[in-house]
Image 1: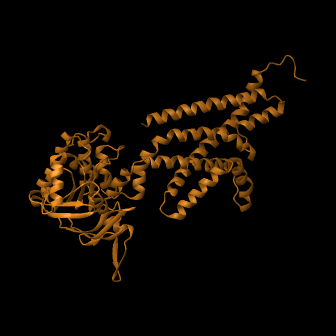
Image 2: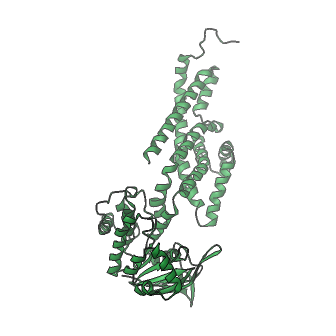
Image 3: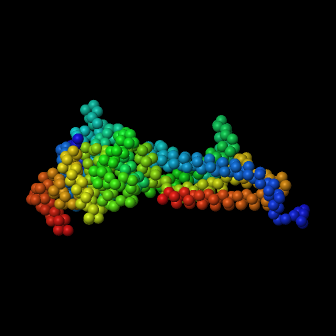
Length: 256
Length: 222
């Protein structure tokens, strides 16, 4: 199961800085989208808005056509209650740049915690599921390790397993390889590539790994200054970018 | 002066005689400390959580209670509970009143300690919990508190020892705790040296023991 994402004129500012300046975007269910662009261009903010870590100042975010923060009421839109937001949030999972694993829990408990206490699975069932996903990311032998004992790459794979165990319809990846040593990046990207190939989830990936974005995503969005400058099939955005600004950016990062 | 010239400075026989009386007082002191601390760490956590509540009236109430308690003397608070509260029809035994007074007083300090502990948990932990859709209570219980509390055990331990040393204030509301027991023993014979010395030794010994225990607990926590 995967869900579509729609943004209608979404705006977000932090103090004086307008980070997203009226974003319109539709991502069909099952698509893998790469978000690229200079830092501060609003890519991560978009993910944070989708994860409900932040609220938009204006505009609407729709998950499968359902508004995240509002509900129709007598012809207009009224603010939605916490239970509505919680239900919509349940369709979305996120993997963080700095992993944000729970340091006082083993890998197994990190992954089993939410299935057990949010989905209400029994202890055995939740742990069974956690084992499956940790196996899937190649950590079947690290179940009882605490995050402190794991390498960065292993931590991030636990992070992916933890998000997957909730079986989200939309997965958000926020610069998930940026904090990793170069030799550990490959393993994490490999997992993401497999997930994308399965087409069971909508995937939105903020990344600085241009090769990965080009090869593994269906579509690439180039962000700058809180706007989408270019939007197209990944092969085209990387092969023959339509915008001069995109070309400049790609030249700069690929040379670096 | 009437003191007999042949009397030793410290009479061990007399010291042994007053010891049982002092032990009765010590039992009260220990009870007051343990119950008072149990109340302080519980109520302190409640106050700390209330302070963070998104609902303004709740967080303001907690802030007001904390400020009031921290800015007024413990002895005044004890008098208030002992003399004023019964006027409203709420009447407790002196010891219960004492436990309540110590507990509420130290809860305000513990709340500040908890606050520091809660603030020390990185924001990413809250965000991960939210992204997993964990509820408020579940996030607090399983994610935040297990990380917030171990670093503050030493600070809570200091308050534990401080409260132990504040228990003699309960004598002002007629609780016969350790110090008051020694005073009563002394006034019966006009010999204070032995009972007071013993009380000092007991406080010193137990404070050191408690401090050692706290160090052990906080060391095992990491």
